Amino acid sequence: MAHVNDPAVLARLMRTKGRWAVVGLTTNEWRAAYDTSLFIRDRLGMEIIPVNLPGDAVHGETGYRKLADIPESKQPIDVVDCFVNSQKVGDVVDQAIAVGAKAVWLQLGVIDEAAAERAKAAGLDVVMNACPAQHAARLGL
Image 1 (tube, rainbow, N blue to C red):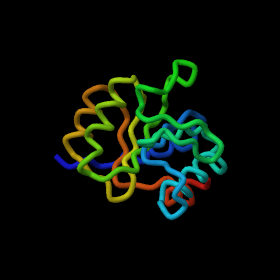
Image 2 (image 1 turned 30 degrees about the vertical axis):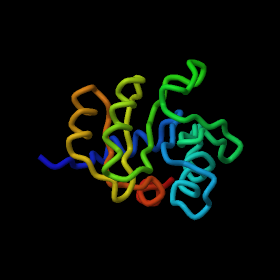
Image 3 (image 1 turned 180 degrees about the vertical axis):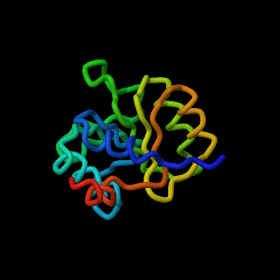
Image 4 (image 1 turned 45 degrees about the vertical axis):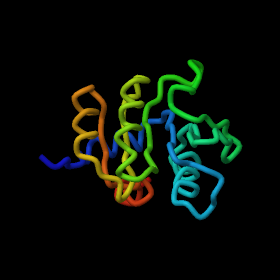
């Protein structure tokens, strides 16, 4: 069965202040993650944690190579925001489950039904194929 985003989950995740690990956020200003992560931090008021292969800092925030590298002091992770392609997102979702994240958010064009089902079965909220910046106007944010 195809995942359908729950509008109440979208609204709650975007309105509740929390900690978002942004997987795929790099210093490349041309990538969607760069501006969207600023929106999440500066407009929605969330704490962001960059997660990228080299572990680079982005927007003045300390970066980590993988979710498991994020220290206890930055736990729990409320949302794992996935800016990776659909073929790689299943591994990120499994990492989110393993670290005890509360939700996964798969960005526009990122679709993995099996990973979404695993996350839901583990008790995580799931948003798939959506961008918070696009939903913000509808929610008055």
